[in-house]
Amino acid sequence: MAHLLEGIEPDGYDRRYGDRELTRRIAPYFRGRGGAVTFVTIAVIIAAAAGSAVPLLLARTVDSAVDDDGDGRLALLVTAILVAGITAWLLTLLQERTTGTLAGDVVLKLREQAFAAAMRQDMTFHDAHPTGVVVSRVTNDTQAFATLISLALSLLGQVLMIVILLTALFVINVPLALVTALVAALIVAVSLAFRRAARNASRQQQQALAEVNGYVQETLRGIAVARNHSHQESAQAELHAVNHQWFRASVRLNRLFSGIFPLLISLTGLGTVAVVLVGGHGVDAGSVSAGEWVLFLEALALFWSPLTSIASFWSQLQQGLAAGERVFALVDREPSVRQRDRVPVPRLRGEFTLRDVHFGYDADHPVLKGVSLTIPAGRTVALVGHTGAGKSSVVRLIMRAYEFQQGSIDVDGLDVRTLDLEQYRRRLGVVTQTPFLFSGTVADNIARGRPGAGRDEIEAAARAVAGGDWLAPLSQGLDTPIDEGGRNLSTGQRQIVALARVFLQDAPVLILDEATASIDPLTEAQIQEGLEALAADRTTIVVAHRLPTVRKADTIVVVDDGRIIEQGDHTTLLAQGGAYRLLYDRYFRHQQPDDDPADDPERPVHHPSPYARAVTPANGLADRNGEESVIDGHRV
Ligand SMILES: Nc1ncnc2c1ncn2[C@@H]1O[C@H](COP(=O)(O)OP(=O)(O)OP(=O)(O)O)[C@@H](O)[C@H]1O
Image 1 (spheres, protein in one colour):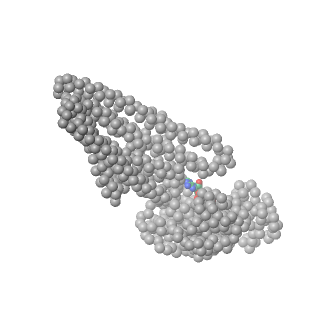
Image 2 (spheres, protein in one colour):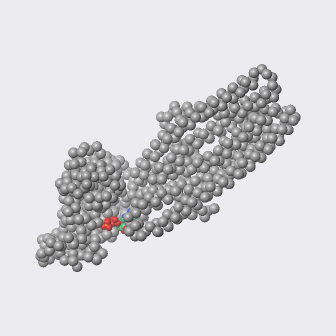
Image 3 (cartoon, rainbow, N blue to C red):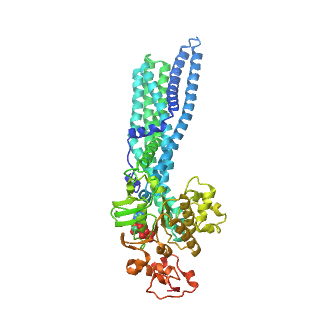
């Protein structure tokens, strides 16, 4: 059957947990709910005792009816059966209700824990595991695991009833009890043997479902790209592949379960035949009363349900256990960004020192190959270089989004690996290339910079970027609704909202990855104005794609193939005539039609036409591809 499971691999951080370890992990979730747990335990025991009393009383009733002694015992016995039956029913009802609340409580706690664990992970984890797969652990798996608790309690009550009844059977008639116990033991043995295979199959089925979730989610998120590239057909084919993995895993699970039931039914049938034969013989010989014979037949029927429940519950039980393993594997996963200490970070001056930093997203592919750099507090540093040179990787390491393999990064003389990570990250105001905005309004998104900020503070932050002019084209200004991710705003507008968010955050360090996407000149000017206001009194590290940013930086750092090959200010580097000079000539210079000849004393002065600005590519990307450039106002 192995072929059915091809392609369903556990995630890298998955591991096996023994039943005992899983049980030990469940216990803390019931802390503070001692009263409810005690009630459930007592209710399970009493309900099991009352449930087992019913067939025992029934046997006595049969014997009493056969003897027909007419002393009113029959009526008493019938009343006792009714009382025992109602007690068992009522207590089971109350117990199941309480258990339902307890299990719901576990889901709440476990889900919050799993969510916190997913949030705690660094980007290495999120790069490697599709969002949908992680979502599946936080939502479906936590629920499946909690269902296990209700199931386990219900099973416990039924097993308890079997134990009580079997004890009574042995007291009444040993040979008949032996036959019944043998059948029961066989059923349990077969169910248990089935256990391991069922858990593996369940685990694989859940993993396959998570893969389907992950694929659907990722494809829908990239729907625009999928459409643009006529990717729909291949997307459908890829879904077909993961969907069939799930199908094969489900078929395997189903085959396992469909094989087990006929076997269990046959075993019980054989047991019934044995009890009928041995019991009938005993009745003939006078060693077994009619009531006792009925009791043993009744007991087998009663056992059938809980014993097969062990197997039928097994599916859910195994799914619950497998889900528990998956949730705890997430909860227990150690982020690869490791802090050695938790030194508080009440404030930062913002001086960074990188010494011989080596880094690769995976160990076999080095991206940064010995980066050393000092960023003085309060200064602006622009990282420039070709695409893929490693500029964003440098800032990602400063942000502690990834763990570097060698070297050190200090901030204000402290190793970043020793800081309280949460506090440190709060001191960094980050604006990415295409900032992610959350659903809500523009104001809600700015407010994320400082939770609890008042409306006037949000408005002030919005006005801090280009005097708030950027709000004019938005239909409802600050109250304009934002779709998930910020899809209804342009890249430039998203960056402006993110800049306003950083204003409100008032972080001492600003990290900006300039957009490479085309941004209209007005928005670009607004972003530039916001950036300058923000950078004025804080350390600013910019992955720069735009000339105004580069020119105004205190230090320009040229990154090439994971190394820093030049650094200095704009004028010095230009005069040096090295790598920056080349970059400037090929990309940056063309971004301004009226580039300042003072920048470059060797160049003659030109007078660009007003048309030049309109055709100037905003970011030089077109130039990179060699498709279109504008030099001195002329298309070339
Ligand atoms: N999440 C990631 N996982 C694996 N490799 C990555 C990841 N991000 C970047 N890389 C690789 O690392 C190298 C450096 O990328 P980086 O994003 O730092 O370049 P960059 O200089 O910022 O480029 P750009 O100007 O295009 O943003 C590239 O080869 C890139 O393919």
